[in-house]
Image 1 (cartoon, rainbow, N blue to C red):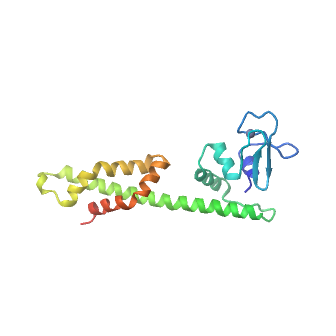
Image 2: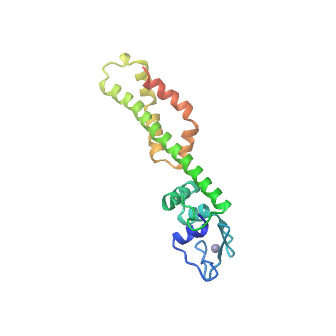
Image 3: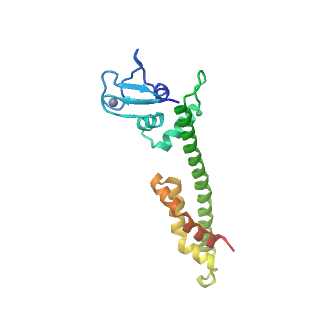
Length: 184
Ligand SMILES: [Zn+2]
């Protein structure tokens, strides 16, 4: 899909030449042109492809914009004509981004549920504890790491993309702590 398709979809209109009033600066007359699947504003210099356009218009990052376009257009390529090489490449790129995002989402959900399981080990141990000395090694570890498990699960659930990425980078070390608590 071209930047013009995205622009049209998100409400821009075009003059006879196919130019649009730029949504990215205080534009009085159409300053934005579309060519080769891309857009360019000759007044404020904004330019890019459909993902750039959507990201900027909707205040999303590239991944969010790709996902949004994905949902809105179902990655539809033009049906009335043969897609250009650039369109095909762009669609493939969107697909790759969407796929990477889907993989991350699957990891995120699975990791959150493991963190919650580890958190619960501590919760139950503390609830049922009669004697500190009777804690098993993994209960003891769970209790020491409970606040961390909670923090990681909470951040993966509600944190910023940057905070989530940080945990993703440290997932190997974190997984070892989870294993220690969840394995018998
Ligand atoms: Zn502009």
